[in-house]
Image (cartoon, rainbow, N blue to C red; front, top):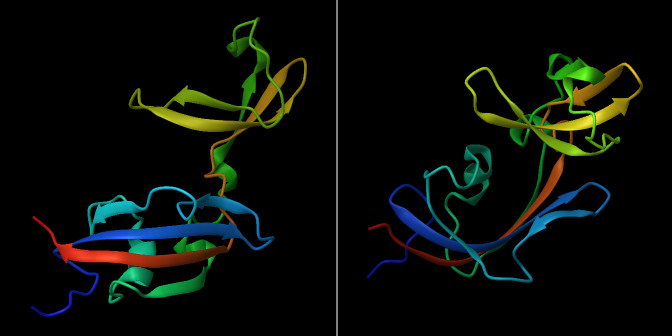
Amino acid sequence: MSELFVGEGTRVTLHFALRLASGEVVDSTFEREPATFGFGDGNLPENFEAYVRGMRAGERKRVTVPPEKAFGQPNPNNIQTFRRSDFPADTQLETGLVMSFADARSGEVPGVIKQVDEDEVIVDFNHPLAGHALDFEVAVIKVEAAE
């Protein structure tokens, strides 16, 4: 039986870590159970899959992912200002708080409170990692044919 490489038609078990340029760990499975996904199933963002494609069990890789291939650049149009009165009076709004908001299709979207004063609340709907280059470390444990 030939050795499988990560790509279409495979199921992959791996450890990964995402770090900011400062070294701060954003997410990692190295200290817990590994992640398993079907290549192309959307569990690993497409641009991250490109870095894993062609690897085989036992291989380890570390790459810097530029913002454009990670979570993009911040979009100033994703920062919105609301009236303070749009929020329930008993809501404790503070800078850095992540809240859930309804989008135009009645789905939920997270927003980060950036500024609060008596009249206005500024909310950032950009992905929290937008604008950041990320250090992506991956260690492939197993590659098998997808069922």
